[in-house]
Image 1: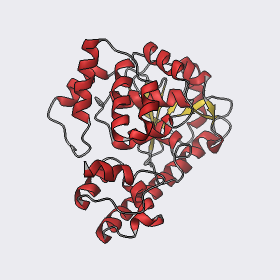
Image 2: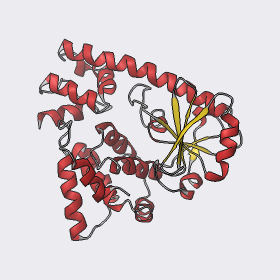
Image 3: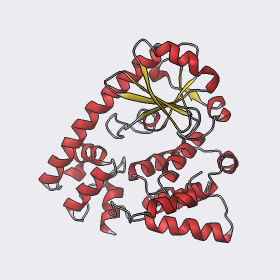
Image 4: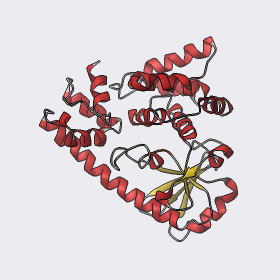
Length: 305
């Protein structure tokens, strides 16, 4: 599939020397829709692969790159300022805000989107007290498991577990690693928990998730992982079907990590496996930017925790 080959080429941190043969307009549409435009733009501007790229492609993607650089920088400085005021707590930086300085070699490679943090219930009030001078509680979500704060310029979500509606998760905090970029109170998930957190987010979308989240999985799978821990945790968190499906999809999108994906793929019963594979089949085409009405909801019933 020319489009998929092109997406692989323009999301690889070691891209080929030649611009891939594909429909450039469709490629740009898909890169932008899947949060990959800035990454592709940087690779085109800094590597030989951009030498024979259509000028219109480079110009279009460069606009995304510049916008994401500015947005990411603003959000990261905001987050650093917030966590500077939080002393003696264990705040786990989640998802894109954890990945951009860990999995990616450049600030603009990964759009941040909504910044999410995990704070244990027992430390929630201390966190609120520490940031209340600049941050006000905007609303609660998921029966109080998620709290959204705002400083009137941006918002940050605080949750208890690996995903917004998930329960408080002791192992997430116990295995979190220091994330000194954001100060002494900041931590990031272990690679295993980060992988499961990303899979959970994808599952809440019925696995019809942005391709950038599968780049996250690709980079996590490229790191040493305790597969036994991942499988045990997936079972305890009811993420086995989601992990099975996500591991099939990341292997489809990025065959270089197919073996690593297979090592963390839970075994399912026949009926479960068939149901998950149907969901996977519907999510395999990155050019399908819209799903049939009700398709996402049906997929969520199969894979969401």
